[in-house]
Amino acid sequence: MSPERSSDAALLLAGREAVAQYGVGGATLERIAEAAGVARTTLHRRGVTRESILQALGEEAAEAYRRALWPALTGSGTGRERLEQALGALCDVAEENIELLLALGSQTDAVFHEDGDDERMTRSPFTEPLERLLRDGAADGTLRGVDPTEYATVVFNLVGWTYLHLRARHGWRAERACHATLDVALHGLAAAQATDFSM
Image (cartoon, rainbow, N blue to C red; front, side):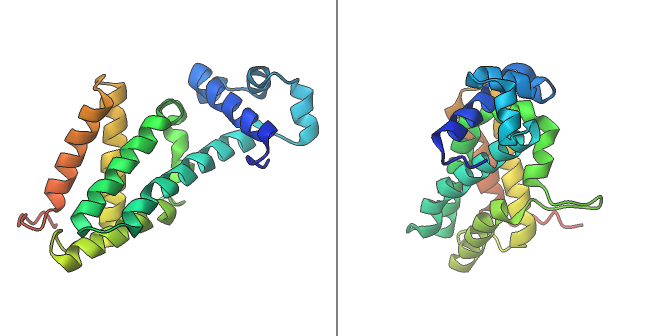
C-alpha cells in the first residue's frame, strides 16, 4: 500500500475513521472498506489487510512527527528554545492524531517502542531529534547535562502521553494541556536545576 496514491490516502482516512469509531478491535477490514466506499473483496484483491492499514497509519503519524520537529532542528536559538519549539510541535502532532492514538492504546507500542522484554527505549526516529536538542542545550548552558539518549525517551513520553491524558481524560483545552506539560518538562531540564534524582 503506497499512501501517495489518492486511493490509498482515502483508504488511510477510512482506516482512521474506523479506528476512531470502533476502536482497534472493532476496526475490521469490512468496516474500513465501508468507510472508504469500496467492497471488502476489492481490498482483498489488492492485498490490503487490516494490519497493513494500521501499520500505515502508525507510519503516517511517525512521519508527521518528523516533519513537525524539523524546524526546531534547523532553526536558530538556544538549545532550550528549540527544545521548547520541538515539544510544542509534539503536542501539535498528538492533537492532530488524538483520536487515532487514543484508540490504538497499547497497540502504539509497536510504533513507538523498541522490541524486547527488558527495559526498552523509544525508537530512535522519535528520540534522535530530542537527543540532539538536549546536547545543544547542554553545550550552550541552557539545559542541564543529562544522558541525552535516556532523557530523550523520558521527555518524548512525558510530553506526548501526558498531553494526551490531559486532553482526553481531564478535558483540558489543547493550549492549556500543552503549556502545563511543557512547563514541567522544561523546568525539569533547565540548567539552573541542581536537584539530582540519580539512583
